[in-house]
Amino acid sequence: MNFNSHVDSTLNTLLENTKFLKEMEAVVSELDVDGEYAKLMEDSSQRRVSAAEILIGLKSKHKALDQELRQCSNESTTIEELERNWPQRQEATEKKTTNVKKTTEYKNFKKTVEETLTMGEGVNGGASGEGDDNDIIVEDDMETGGEIFSMYDPWSKALMRNPVRNTHCRHLYDRDSVFAVIKNNIGIRCPVLGCANNKYIQPGHLVRDLKVQKIVRARIAEEAQEQEVSSSEDDDDEN
Image (cartoon, rainbow, N blue to C red; front, side):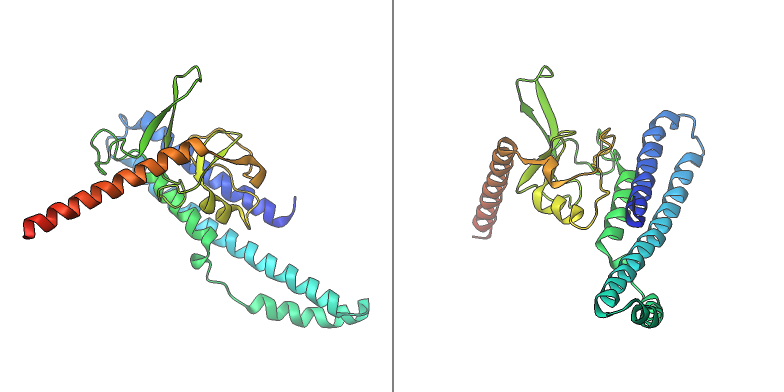
């Protein structure tokens, strides 16, 4: 396993630890009268985000050095020439800085941590007030009688336009969203809270789900019709 793979594995472990602590919150909530566990969750999550910033920065620097070394090697005709040129180019590369907080990988990591901390706050009339409107049941021939899934992508939180299913855990993502996330990251696991699938997501694991796509498009059409009716009623009121 190369350096970047080790970093990706560590980042995923940090996310999994956050999810585990969040799941434990329900168990200890009755005993956490003074909110000590909630404070522990917040503090530890901030430390994980800080650690992720450092790790992603190291990975970015490692990638830049690797690319520069390859280029220097290709431009050198002898080992002696490479040994003369590399130290200076290495020093120049190491002096370059990257704003890690602006990278997609850091933003995705921080967003996942923050969403894990707030997971479940809107259930049963809670803080968000959305209830289960984002979830629907698809009747199936499975023994369970149906599948429950969210029509909203776990990364972008937007309505899935082109849903694909992970064949290893059956969770759904928007195709554009998941491919953007895994494009340069080989160590990304399913982001759905509580998912037991430990396999890194690969393009070959993702299959288009036409049945879900049909349902999502029906919802989009329904919302568009409702919006049109609402706009028409507003126009009537103005007249």
